[in-house]
Every structure is written in structure tokens, then in C-alpha cells.
Picture 1: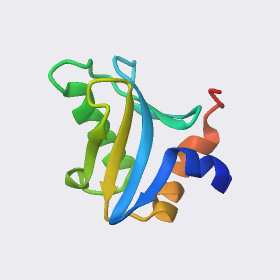
Picture 2: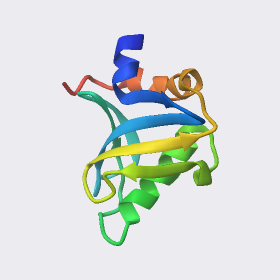
Picture 3: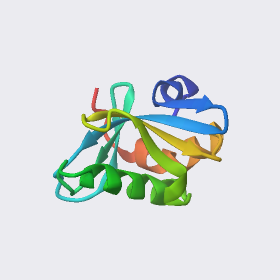
Picture 4: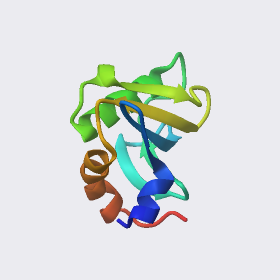
Length: 110
């Protein structure tokens, strides 16, 4: 994963990072799919009803990034597929390294 690709979907901010995410609710299984343009595509099984898909997205990203779910929050796009998800207490290099196995193995979507 080049730093140019990384910088498109992963942004360092004060106290953490923000991921640009393209969510796919109602998928057969929850997983990080790979890159989708300038976003990290994440599939979740839950439907977007009463915040269920966002809750599953937060839990999945917390697991992938090996952080507590309380440090992960959807900061924009809660009602759409395109989201910005903040992870507190994680630096960009660590986040990129933890997501790399999923991104590097996935086919390019763009």
C-alpha cells in the first residue's frame, strides 16, 4: 500500500485518525472489503435501521484495528453509505498497518 493510496482514505487528526468509509449494509458477511475509490469499503450484515448498521460498523472496525469500540465513532454520514469514522488514540501508521492485510488482499474496486 503506497502512502498516496493510504492518504486518500486515512487522515491523521489531533488525537487519532479519521477513516473515509464506504459502507455496504445488508451484506452476506461483515468484513473489510478493500479500497473503493478514495474510501475503505466495509460490508456489514445489519440493515440501516435504527442505527444497527452503524453499530456493527463501529464494532467491526474496532476489532480490525484492535481498539476498544468506545474509541470508534461515526463523525459524519451516519445516514448514508459514505462515512467518516474517527478512531481516538491511534496513529496513522498503526491504523494503516492494521488495515493493510485487508486492503492488500482485496481486489481494486476502482
